[in-house]
Length: 312
Ligand code: SAM
Image (cartoon, rainbow, N blue to C red):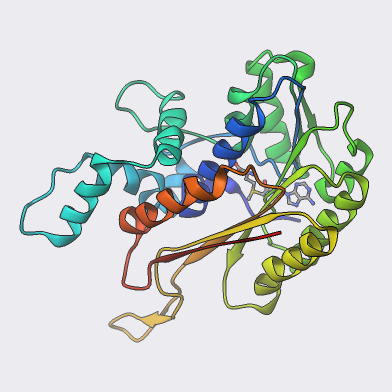
């Protein structure tokens, strides 16, 4: 079956981008009085330990969330240009990033960074009593862990965990009762078909519920299907006459290198993107401030960069 376990990747640079954008979207949508339903089509286990076996094996948080913490807490040596640039950022951190850091910190004891919340816990933390959260997780182990983690929250009927295919399962819930919804879709893209399925899910959802906010995360890797995701989502949004926002963050080169023994070294995930349809009108300005800072804080080589486009 599936081998992808998000515990290996929790807190990596893709999570930093995805979760900061998620929080900013929710902050805006939750300002209104009408109830919001949030759908997480690919929920994962919900809560992760950065000092646990999975995270320690992959070390991915070290180049994501933990790198951010380290950069912001390391005093700059005056002669070091990179550190000086980080210091400038740290002294005036973008509100979107500060909000993300504060929210992750709220799951930890002071100055400890052992617990990392996945999207289900981030979302639930921000919801009001009237709002609802529907979590889809198909993997038996992760779904069981997610259910156990969510049970600790004693959130009752506010949160539902569904052990089913999120691409299909969402159909029966759209449009939601109060006609306000955020759909986060964060597939593992372990199956090549996920690229086409995420686009098909958004296409179908827009027909069922055109005013929902749709946020799709995707990896930027050298494969045509991955490049197709934002291109196809842009076409869908444009055809539906809906505004869209597209943000990408690259932290390093995607080129293969080799070690001293001539063995090929794969770079790991170099970049990822978030494509949002019907984004909050405040999101672009917030990202314009935050993305260059993420490049400074998380960039690993001269290929580090961001893009931010919008339309509609
Ligand atoms: N959204 C989570 C977060 O930000 O914390 C991480 C999700 S992880 C990238 C993707 C998850 O989707 C995995 O746990 C995987 O088991 C699950 N999954 C894969 N295919 C699925 C499907 N068709 N429906 C629901 N869940 C699926």
